[in-house]
Every structure is written in structure tokens, then in C-alpha cells.
Amino acid sequence: LQVLDLETATIVEAYAKRLESLDPKYRLILLDLALPAVKQLKGVERDEFSKHLRQLAQADNQLSLFEYCYVTIVERQLR
Image 1 (spheres, rainbow, N blue to C red):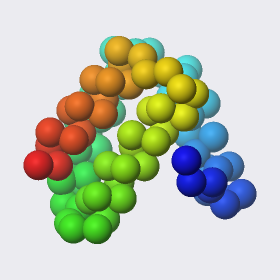
Image 2: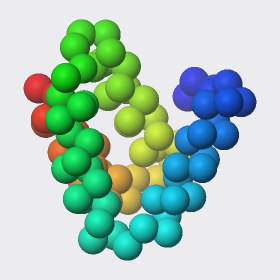
Image 3: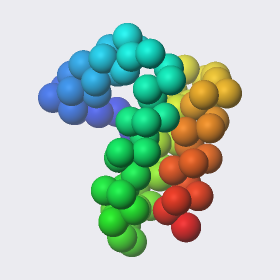
Image 4: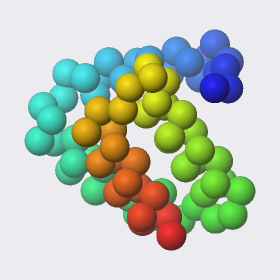
């Protein structure tokens, strides 16, 4: 797993805390809102995004059903 710089890690942690407190039923809505921007990624950006998404989902050496679904949805949209 690639180590993030301090600034990026701080930003990711802040967003993670916000998402943890978000009612799970709204997480899919948030993903749906983000997908158009994700779909615009091309080439290396797309590959890097997908790689980092998988790394984040597996960072704790566990893959929850929710994480699996998110990764699967995003990767299918990137095809």
C-alpha cells in the first residue's frame, strides 16, 4: 500500500469521518452523484483511481460487503 503524504492523509481522514456518520442509505446516493465525474477520467488517471479505490477498500485487510459493492459499481462504470 502506498503511503499518503500528510496533507492528503489528513483530507482523506476528514472525509472518512464524515462518511462514517452519514446514514448508509445516503452513501449510494452520494456515489451516484460522484459517478459522472469519475466516468470522465481517462487512461492513467482512471487506472490510478481504480487502484487507489481498491487499496483503500482493503487497507484494513478486510473487505466489507459495502466496500465490495462500492468498488464493483465504480469499476464497472469505468469500463
